[in-house]
Length: 405
Image (cartoon, rainbow, N blue to C red; front, side, top):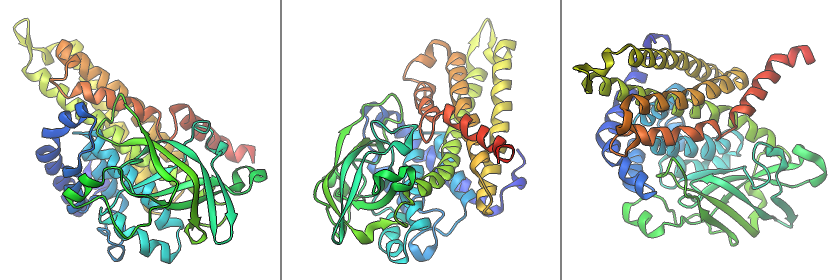
């Protein structure tokens, strides 16, 4: 892809900075934290110091003041080395922070965004429930108005940063008879479960945030991939949330969260494309040095065909991804473009990582090479933030929208 199509010199400078950080500081520790299933506090602190946890937010809110393309580039470059670090930035920024930026009051933005943008605490997004996955409108968590508070009861599952995070935006039903229009969203806070570690590294906790009684993290998930990313339940037991913590108008939570997911899908497409590209780079290098039958295996047509397919699909994925990001940056409708980018890049991540393992042969099935981890990390990209099946439904509805209207 011609860099001049989408990138300025500033974008390229961001890319080089993140690429160096990823290769010099993340790559050496990625396999260790994956094996332990441990959140990488030290490198997350470095990401905060580099401004990577607040890339697209204004400087007056503690962000780096860069644009959406810069942010997408950060995720893309990190994912080439480690998806767990990439999803930490993506979930924190798009899912945990953007709803407050986009739908919050000025007071809410000034209260919470500087903490999140500077990486002083981590944020998360609570939508998925045990009975409301692809059917996000099936939310059962309730919010009942009592005086100056809403009392929340229910649970969320598969929440990135559910344990380590302190600021969350979540949905709950405020009008049970109104369907999706009866779902509202709230800003809720709790202490990190890793308080001692957070204090030792100097990020992850802020004493000014109230611990809302009854709001806590539940079981940590033991996952196939993204193992250095913290994923847990969120539990609400008679949690009193001040009315001023409602995010947006009452009944707008579902609509606003769907808009958030449009942008989240661009971020996840960037992560998936980064995985595909990282696996391709590993396979290309391995093919050039691994010798069989007296020559590098990259000289064999069967390997060349796989590498050619990977390279071609990665180029196609780049155009889908950065086109969607360009549309979003210029305030245009992104629903269809984001779904296409997410669908193509997530399925590409699986195809490319499987090919990379195959090219590595038996070594690819061991933990001695990163392609094994990349293949495990790729699968969730076809599930999270809307499954591939949901993306196809979204695309089809957009295609048929004018005709049906």
